[in-house]
Image: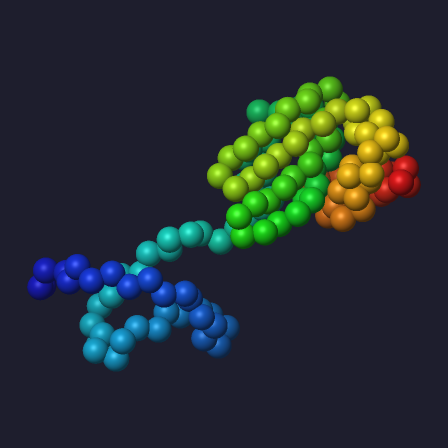
Length: 133
């Protein structure tokens, strides 16, 4: 086998039927190429679970607040833990339920976050928090 060529191409995977593919120059037709995933797809539930795993005994609800390419904002409701965690592009606020209820009554910013929140864990608690708005 010939030594691999050192040329590197960065291409976005595109839809090809029910799959995805990478378009390369015609000169590569019939040659073996290596494709490496530079940025893996997001799996928010799995990623948040691994971030919050040391606190699972205290967590009673997890909610997605906002998602962009650079930042994923998560709200985790706990029994008594108050923390802010950052890992890669995940920003996780762990807030005690009592503090969150008080904040909903006093701060419009918190009310807006609860309005747009999407449940990851405990949909019923989110429904109850939305009643407080």
